[in-house]
Amino acid sequence: MFNCLKCITCTRKKQEVEASGDSKSGASKLLGEGGFGKVYSVPGGGSNNTLYAVKVAEPQDHRQLERLEMEILIHGSLQHDRIVRMLDWVETPAGQFYICLEYCEKGALSSYAAQLKEEKRYMDSQQIRRIFRQLVEGCEYLHERCIIHRDLKPQNILLTKSLDVKITDFGLAIIKPGQGAVWASVWGSPGYVLLEPRYTTAADVWALGCVLFWMYAGFVAFPERNIKSRNHQRKVRRLSTLRKTILKFSAVTVGDLLLRLLEEQPEHRPSCAAILSHDFLRQDGVLVDKDVHTRDRAVAKRHAFRRPPFYRDYWAELFGR
Image (cartoon, rainbow, N blue to C red; front, side, top):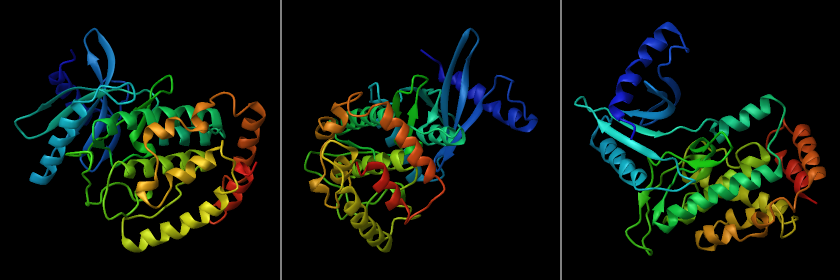
């Protein structure tokens, strides 16, 4: 078992790396940062050449401490191929937390898509279908255990070297006390959450729809910067416009699935099990052929520098088959 005390020694070297600008020293490298801390890649040390991701967090108040402890409790209990593994964790006398996680070579889905765009390439329909299926499988595992992630977005979806999906960042996750329980507090990223009076696992399903839209369109469907009632009304109006375009799609395309995922009423959204049985995910490698892949890329290129409200033209051309 990897010893997290070694992580502490390695992560302290980050200051030397940042000061010298030396990225070849074998010490830690900053992978990303969020509201609760920073994440570094850390070598195992000695004869262990394995890389690990180490989250370094230092709660500033009692509320942050409770959230971090909940994150460790939830994440540490999960064992699934579509969930980033938590290997170990430790708290230092100074109050810092070091959480050792499985390292994913390709990084976040958002970074992977950005890299493809720089290379003037795009994820084709078959690749999107594979990634989305694995994402739903991980989400189904969480929901079966009464866990709501509450922050599903491309930045929290990691990819391994073989482009397998791993869900990460359980900082906002909660455990429902029962199947009928709901939560009223609003959490999550503005572009991937809908303001609702009560929250269930359907909130994650909405986020899945937003991620699927983003993978195809290349931009966020609901680009609000905060979660407020006025932004909620904008989302509802934009959703109405999207539905008019999506209604043109046939039942076996992504359009039909998007209609179900981006349903305003949470009780009408499908479960993860129902999503996995949808024709869009059941016909991998059959529904979309090489000619369609070529067409997808050509359409995406023509609309690459356009912004809403031009997305309606993009959707109509790309999916109005």
